[in-house]
Length: 338
Image 1: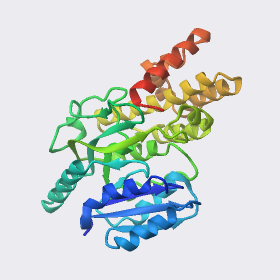
Image 2: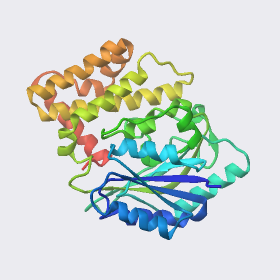
Image 3: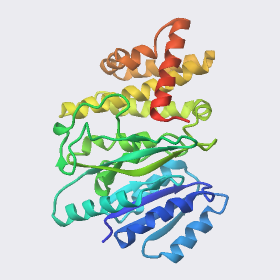
Image 4: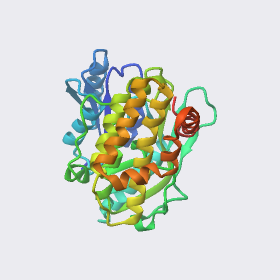
C-alpha cells in the first residue's frame, strides 16, 4: 500500500528536476512519485524514464501533451494510488527530517483508523540571494500534533493563508469534490488549495519546515513582470473563485471567514498589478473584474470592497494608485514575490 502519492509537474524541467526527485526518494516504498512530463521539449522525458527504470517500485513517469501545470496536477490525481496526495513543483524540494516525520504521522493515523482529510505543514521561501529564509508557519493558528476541526482553528489574517506547499490532501477527497483544474492556465495552485476546503472536516498540523519553495528564476510565474504579462490568466483564476463563492454558504463560520480572506487576496493581487501597470487597458480590466464580482454576488462584492485590502486597492485617483502600489510592494516583501 502506498501511503502518499507525490506528483511532480514538469515542463522543460531538466535543469533542476533531479534535485526535487532525489529529495523525495527517501520516502521509499511508502510513497509513489509521479513525474508528469507535460509535453516537454528538453530532456525532461528522458530523465523521468531513467528514474522510473532505476526505481520502478517508487517512481512512475507519465507523459502527456502539454496542458499546463493544472493538467499535470489533474494527471497526478487521476493516476494516484496513494491514500494521500501532495504536489511538489519540479524546482522545489523537501527537507528530509520533516519528510520522515510526515510519513510517520500519516502511517500512524491510517493504521489507527483515524480520519484525516488534510495534513498541514510549514514551508520555507528559498529566495535566491537571501540568507534569512522566511518560514510560513501556522502554530499560532492551529492546534499542533493532533486531529482537529475548523472550530478549533483561529482566525487567519491576510498573509497567513494555506498554499499548495502547505497541504497534503486525502486523495479520495480530491476526487470526490470533483476538482478539475483548467488547462493552459497559470496560478491554478490557488484553486487547488481553495476549492477542496469546504470538504475538509478533519485536519492535522505538524510544525515542521517540510516544503522548500524556490524563488529566483527569471522565468518563474511569480516574477512580477511575468505576473503582469500573464494578468489575463490571473483574472481567469480570480473569476473562477468568484463563480465558486457566489451564493455559497458555509456551515462553519471559521471556514467561511478563511474562504473570504483568501478571496480578498485573490481580488487584491490582480487589482494591484493592474494598477501598477497603469495603462487604460489595465485599469479597464480591473474595473471589469470588480463588476464581474458585483454581478455574481452583490453581498460578497460589498464585503470585498469594504475589506482593508479592497479599500486600499480601489482608492480613487492618482493618490489611490500610489496607495495601491504601496500595498502591493508590502505584500511583495511579505509573501516573497520575485
